[in-house]
Length: 109
Image 1 (tube, helix red, strand yellow):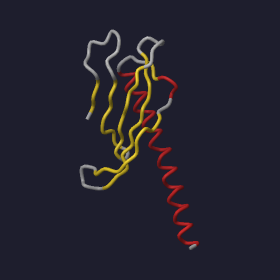
Image 2: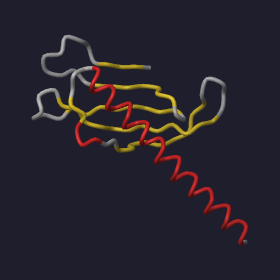
Image 3: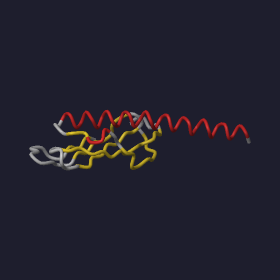
Image 4: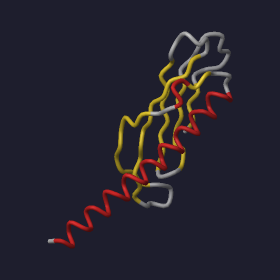
């Protein structure tokens, strides 16, 4: 029984540390996307909105995380954006159309 408890605690610790690392990756990607399109990355943070499993290109089972974050084009409004990580790899990034935008909504898949 103690071995099972130790394994569960080690698994929980791994998941927590892995989640912190993936959140840092998501913050960096969100900030880079905002800078690329001349937007403000608001609150300097992302929030996880969905967690599930999916297979990568090689068929390995990975955790897929969807993060939400907000940007602004004027400094007074908030535009909700999402990005999806499969493992550590960016799978998709969505930024809605914004004021003075001459481009269609950004969707990276």
